[in-house]
Image 1 (tube, rainbow, N blue to C red):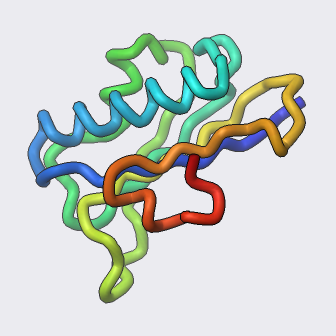
Image 2 (spheres, one colour):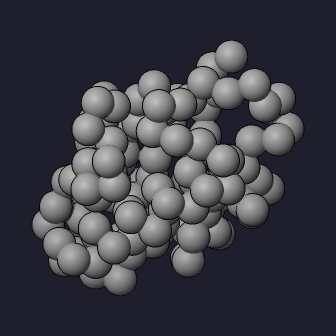
Length: 119
């Protein structure tokens, strides 16, 4: 069965190390909370708010071993007043878990984005 997992993290700054650290934390939490391996991951879409351009978020996933997983990065819509410095992800995974057992992960300030599903 294919499921989608959402997540987001607010990073400290538009800085390469801050982006890589935040995305590493986010991907690690998504994988751990959902008991996944990279073999379970079909693809991951990363988006970043327009104020983040110091590094591609997908690089952090590559460094975690996502070598054979299709990854893509895109820019979020520049909505006035939106939360700044946010990287989002949508991971498509193969799992036997029902939808209600999927853990979406929102870290740091990004938890405010989806208080209804953030765990």
